[in-house]
Image (cartoon, rainbow, N blue to C red; front, side, top):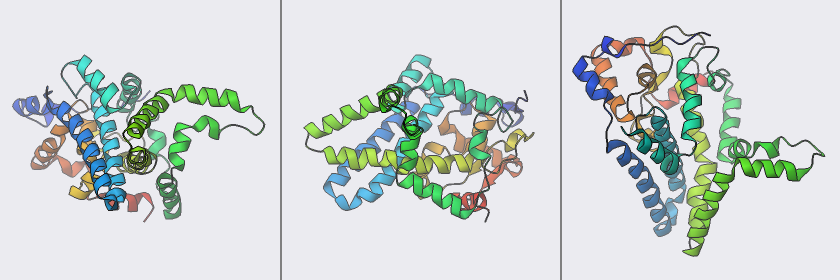
Length: 303
C-alpha cells in the first residue's frame, strides 16, 4: 500500500510557532460547539418572529449542522479538547454521533490521501463532470433526494417483490439514533406548540441545505486533485472564503483543507494563522489554493 507522504511541521514553523499552532484548548472547542447551537437557536427564534427569514434560516442552520460535523471531525483528530474523554463525549452527544467509528475511517483517509487506498477517493474521482450533471446533483440535494438515499438506502435498494418488513426493520435499526433523537425533538417542540419550527428549521435544513454544502465541501477539498499525488502540499485544496461563504458554505475554517492535511492534528481555529504564516514564508505558492467556491465549482463542472 502507498502511504501518503507527510510533512514535518518544523520544516515550516519555528518551534514556538508550532507550539502555539498545535496547542489544544480547554475552552475554544467547547465555545465553538456552543456557538453552533446558539446560531441554530437564534435562527429558529428569528424564524418564529419574522417568518420571512425562514429561507435564509434554512441555509444558516444547514451550514451550522455541517459545522457541528466539522467539529466532530476535529474531535476525531483529538483536537476539540485536551482531555480525550471530554473530547469524545462532546463530539458524540453535542456534535454528531459515531465519533470513534468516524475516527477509524477518517484516519485511513489521511494515511492514504489521494492514493489508491484512500477510502474517500470515490468522492473526488468522478470530477470533472458536465455542468448538467452537477446541476442534477444540486437539485437532488435541495429536494431531499440525496438525504433520503443516504439515510434510507436499504429501502431505495429494495428489489421488486422483496418483502418490505425485513428491509424496513433493518433500516430502522440502522437509523435508530437518528429516528429517536429527531422523534424526541419533534415531540418537545410539539408540546411547546412549535412543531412547525422543528420541521421547517431543523429537518428541512438537514434534508436539503446540509447535503448540498456537504457536497460543496467534498468537491472543494479533493476534486481535481491528482490521484497518487506525491506532493504532500497538494493532497487537498484550500479555498479562500469570504464572510458570506463562511456563513453559508464553509463553517469553522473547514475551507483550509490543504493546511489540515499537512498538519492533521492542528485544531481548526489555528488553521487561518497557519495559512498566514505559510503565506509569509512563501509555502502557499506550492499548495493547491482556489480563490473562491465559484472557481472550484466551475472547474469541477469542466468550465
